[in-house]
Length: 311
Ligand SMILES: [Zn+2]
Image (cartoon, rainbow, N blue to C red; front, side, top):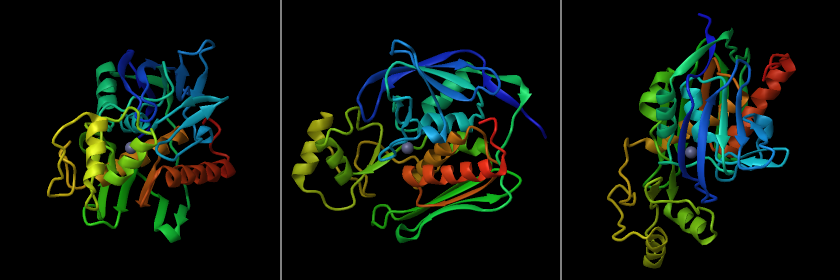
């Protein structure tokens, strides 16, 4: 069945803090016309430059997915893009008054709520989908990383992670339709290992970090000084390690919340193609670098087929 493109029905705003830059930031989602795509606009800068959510604008992927167009940055876009993919929003203008999307609770739940609050509006142009007639694959065998887009009539996605530690080893998450993402996956939060968190704190890389926007796994017995430094950074008392190896800052929603969050991240990164996919996505050990390299391969495949004119 053919479907038309969608935007939101009314504008809606949210405020928060950038996870890495620590900036106070507000974003406003505004309706946009057909074939506009997802575009950010830096309203804090004098000429109000725009940055398109497009795979060719990806720069750094070390801790999040970051975009840059004509020297203008939009950082940590993946959770918002996952919400837009999940809610099938084709066209949107996003006003932002700093360079990083707010982290909120580390999931896509707040962005989904915003879109539900704004409502959706059908446009008169037909939606185009991305499909392939052969498998597109990105792999890094030495790290066990493999991401595939397999030809199929409808969109499905499955993700496997394996951190090889006793507190977080092999996990799996999958969706057979987008509603499952919105209902079950979109609230799954980002996660970090305690030793990584300690490194990030030491190097001033999580200026906007709060202990309520990430699950913290403790994979080896920490030295008490590390726990104390983390405790002091977040200005919290009584930080302890739960029996399941997580810090007692947040409770897991599902035993496989990390795998679900990796699915969320990949869905967001895939939306840098600008259109929804009809096909089966299978990913082993995804991450922002692998995800965006995979998306580039899909983009190149489509470009060679001459079927990405409207992106
Ligand atoms: Zn994430």
